[in-house]
Image (cartoon, rainbow, N blue to C red; front, side):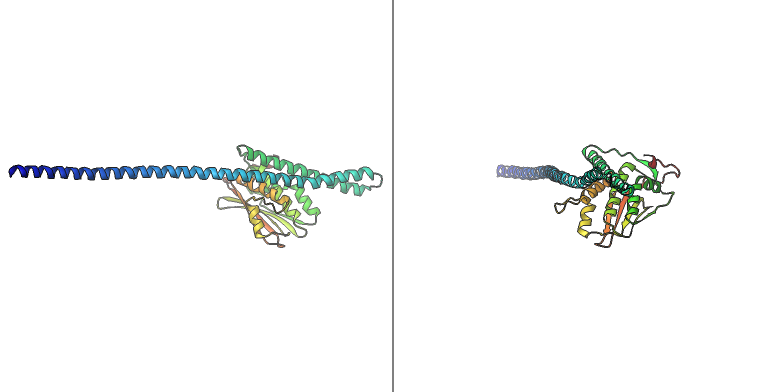
Length: 298
């Protein structure tokens, strides 16, 4: 009887140990499974991240190829008109040199000068944009007086607007200095002014600017044709569509990309036949000392 109790006790102990072992193994393997599950989830998340990055790169490459093809067609279209005009003008001068009056000659040479300036400016802007897209961008910032800079670097567009009968207003304080890459800013402003003049038949174009809340704002407003909200949104984000050959698209793509390089952006407020107001927002790198203008010398 005593031996049976001992045997039963031993069996209970062994059973308890077996149950304890089973419970231990259960929790041990459950913890291990959970850990492995977490590791698998983490690795799946990493794989998903890289998959998304690869898909994003693939989309970017496709968009880039599409854009470059589109850009080439627009560039060819945009250069063809002024080159054709120059060719026809030169032929006319050659064939009618004896009959051309001094006044007519002056008008033709002025038009040729401006057309050639537009071609050179457009090509230079395009090359600068391509250069900054194809390799790492290094900002070359300097301090400059904005009013002086616009007066000197955008003089031909101011003259062009006045010859078209448009009132050109520049409302900038003489002591308004900014620090930025003025080479890129010049390209941005030239494109915006050129577009404003092209799309404004009567009225005025104004340039204003001011610092606010750690930003610099430069606003170009015209009383021209305006555009639809959808078109404005496309141009704000530098989108090129297949709907039209308008050189405006590549001009705004250049503006968008260069503004992004300057850590800025553009915003467009517009209505069809009511004009447009385009704001270039740039970071304010602090108030530079008055009297140190280097931008106009560039």
